[in-house]
Image (cartoon, rainbow, N blue to C red):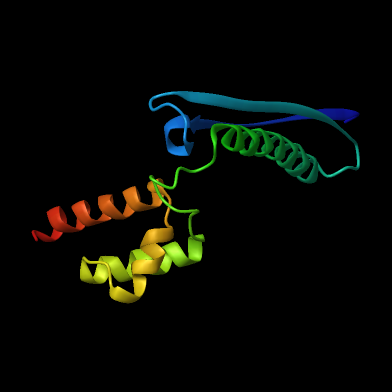
Length: 131
């Protein structure tokens, strides 16, 4: 084995309406790269490096475009909460079916997509459990 070529790609679609842009407009972001791996080098490490490079490139462009669009609209939600906070909120909500008083502040900080996920959870809970 002289050398092999490792190729990796990463892509994301950005919904402009969720970030202050026009509703129903989106943009696609894509990156692909190839790395030659010589004998004795670790192909898994090369793949990870290629994937990380592509992901960084796409996520940087996404962040730039969100900033250009004006960021998350306050009308659609706050600045967002962490996945850990969201998980705790979602679990508490799933148990009771309502937003607890101590969770109200988190609700107000959620992004539009986080709120939408909770609303879908409520619909699923109500239809599944017959409430």
